Image (tube, rainbow, N blue to C red; front, side):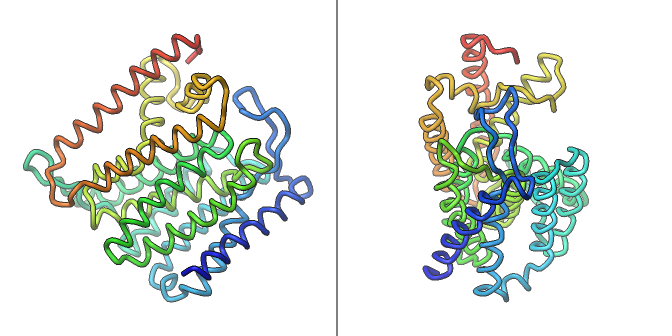
Length: 334
């Protein structure tokens, strides 16, 4: 494994450097707006680089695995393509939404579905015919959740590395080659990307990276339901979930559109709390995600998840109250 992941790291470094060099020629440039953390035009599309590196190496070293999960890898490729298109010239949210739904349907052919949510207060929650629509809801929701935290140099990559590392441990502990190979490959590609993306970033991953990562993590989460309870997965992927749920609740309570962009995400608030220090903010949120992931990894598959759900909701409520207090103190318009 050392050889293949060394190759992913080196190829990611090379491909990302090429994209950075020709970003203007290929129209892969991020122009800052009022909500951006950067002030200068910056290359984007690094997701193209680490995705290509990962696909090339996995094809050489794990071709049988790709054939076994061929529909899943086709689905990932579709999400990657819409991300590339968005990085190049932009696509509408509806187009991305449709592609994500269509790609998620492909997972069904490889039996990657959420069919059971576990036992809550002694009652088993089996989805039955709702398995497909619920899986679509979960995958599309989390993919967009990860996309929303891609707002500071290194943040999306750092949080994803922590989450993917947790999934690697799950795969290793249960001898699941798919989970191990995919999670380790993306961790390696992201480590190479961080060399360019750590503040001050010289290139962003773009939607080619963030959408693909969100989709990959969703797939690994569903696969991990074979070994861990559903609430455990909530903790393993906590930061993107917390951010999205809290932002949606706040917008709804304020009478705003739940999909309206603003500067009131968790990373915006903590950045000001840390005196605009982006590196401290990213490291803090990375450590915070690591703590939640460790909690999630301790939970047993056969446990009753009722009280765990209450614990997870309690964490959302407490964080919601804290962030609202910070918003008032920072005089943000949310």
